[in-house]
Image (cartoon, rainbow, N blue to C red; front, side, top):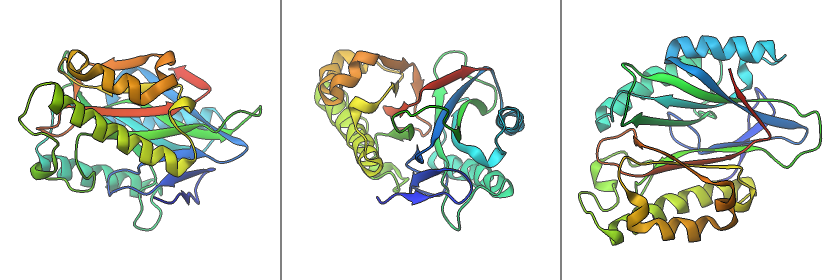
Length: 251
């Protein structure tokens, strides 16, 4: 997975699939800012808020590089594809696509408790000029327990319908490997992460927590952020994303 530069803003991206890239990394002299909304908004309205916030910070809306969504419940595979078509159309309308590539990273999960009534924008990231010299900032898109992230069908799900420590170990190893592949493309690894997010609605830690702790190494020192949420597709059990940013905002 070779990095490709965005022509719209100072970041490069790991090529992914139609609805999202594998991740983004700021160019030298730029930084990624992560914004969590104090109140989630319906995703189309949320994009209007993105424009307001980026413009207020002296950036264009094309500085958007990553999106975090919350959906009411996991989609069927067909439902996921249908939503992604709507979402990609909006990105196209904003002028964010690069030919056939979608450079924008994304995480989309379904909270177990107090889910939204419709898909909402929870958070987003954008790039701006860095005011001081800092380590490269990056966002790795969410990845669930699929053997192949581009193979959106049930047969690609890791250990589907199986419970127990070995099944959870396989899920965690698969997702961690995907995180590592994407980070490797950016020239970073676990030790560079400021945030490690986990999305799972089951007690994965008692089953195979040691697998994850061993895999992420020093990154565990910053804490593991566990969201009690389902991945966005029915049948998936475990998802992760990671990032390194120096500026976190809640607006």
